[in-house]
Image (cartoon, rainbow, N blue to C red; front, side):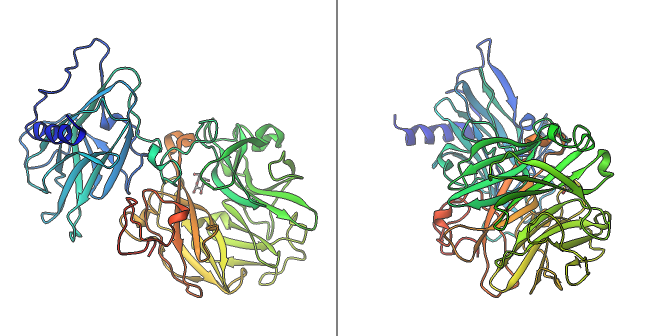
Length: 506
Ligand code: GAL
């Protein structure tokens, strides 16, 4: 029996909830894993944050369920199946909170092969059971597609959905192998040794044809127990581990252990031929709020701690970034005044200190006074300067703000939230850290964001998304892509990597 026939037969059988074809969980080692117990919050999804809960079974149903995982229509969750994964069973239905007009189609895929699909379902339809034999597959994707044209609220439930397996339990967060050369926002991103990349709140620098990515190593949690980790790459997708280039132990004691070292960024100074790492250094409970500086002769370190300062006004220094303009002028952009106001401060020619004497409006400026912004990312395209920042809600995501200006010192004009689509108000559950030009694609940029996992910060994900700006325009749109490739930028590819009439990013 070829695969298509088997698939059809499984789909047919599963519509009736039969387990006839399937191995029963009779083997002593067979275990079950509920979808609701998996690491789905940080899984690969079209968008949104599936919630595992037990009490919200669809209203039309008289059946009882122990678990329900709710996700939004147009979500995708890819799950890696280790050898030993046997079956997937469950039921699907629209959530009782869905609009009465909403309609969605549930389906389960192995790569391009559709293993099972529900009919189009509406809110009060009774749950539909499915049962699949998964022993042949290495990976599956659970999809929910909203009926074309329905703009209604459409939360959907996977009820009592569970895997049976022996050995290693299935995983929700790894990059699907067929997308290994793609950016896969929200998936675990592994380095060349297979370890998850630890470069949170990070920044990129290109030296020759090599990119360097520095960021916070949170493998030991919130506080600065490890230091700044660095990786290198030639294509931005595959990263070589360069190790911890500024170990926590090399910093003054108040900035290690219970202190923090956040949002490190590196820049190259042509005058001194040195690499400058600026970062937010802080003591316990963010009580010191200073700009840290470390210097290295090579981009991959080792970096040597130099000083911690408050650049201007003796104001607090927390979430930060560095921007280098085409004339070589470098600026620190950071959350000052206890995070109420962003400051932009020009550095001197060495990049090692603020330009003196400090004069507001000429060596430094305020951006959005009293706007309560964090996570600034500044860049330039043509004659316009752009700044994306978050609001201040700690590890919880909020809506991003875009500002534009004709000069880094402003005046900066608010341009709204550039993120569009479902969950744009939560920046697709991310917080900005950097924006870089997409190499080889003039007019294209890459948004780099962190999807924080507050309960387990080392297990936070990276969300990088491409977008395009029309030269001279103060507006652009950032949309979700479940995976994407630099080679396809500007081509007609949708979020599923399929060809469409509309160019990606527009
Ligand atoms: C965020 C900030 C992070 C970290 C966190 C602590 O708002 O962007 O860098 O400081 O708060 O709660």
